[in-house]
Length: 234
Image 1 (cartoon, rainbow, N blue to C red):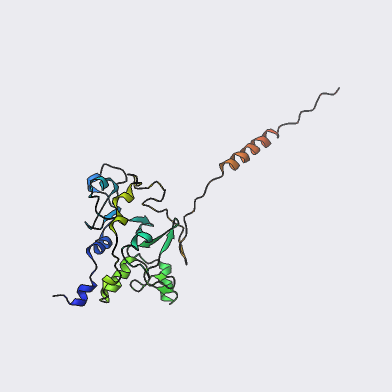
Image 2: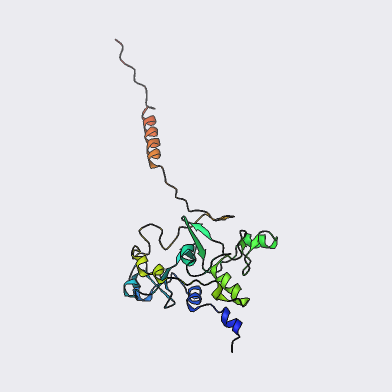
């Protein structure tokens, strides 16, 4: 029989399912559709499904959208804060939205070297380099730390309103997995991480007008390089 402390420390079913789920895998029910990746999680059923499954899912169930950044699952901080206290978890600003990584990420070689040198603040669970004053790099690292220490999970869980996660929030979600606002399921890949988190993705627009003007100038100069023609003497 489990002790009272262990029972109090257990994470609820929806939270365990969220951290254990494999997102962005193909949906078996819609293999013939484009963009059939599973990126919507039902907090009642504790399972994920793709946008094509929305019409057949129970409209009363609260739903959470998971997004993708540098091959990792992330959730918008505004959404996750309604479910669980995200304090001490380092957020990242991506495409003007703050997000939280769902699971622990692999350490880079440079981060491991910094860790050996004893520099920087590190995650309590996986020792990943963090900014001050954060203690965790992901939601799962915070949950694992609390469960290992036997802390009561109810102290960080929120009593959320189902209407905040209603199916209506996906009315603008296109069947290809993106939304009308252009900030769809996949965030664009940034150009690395700085001390302030991943850099904002940048768009590089080629100046085709300038290039065409330059080519016209070259063509004009080439025409002027012919043999000079003298006007006839009067």
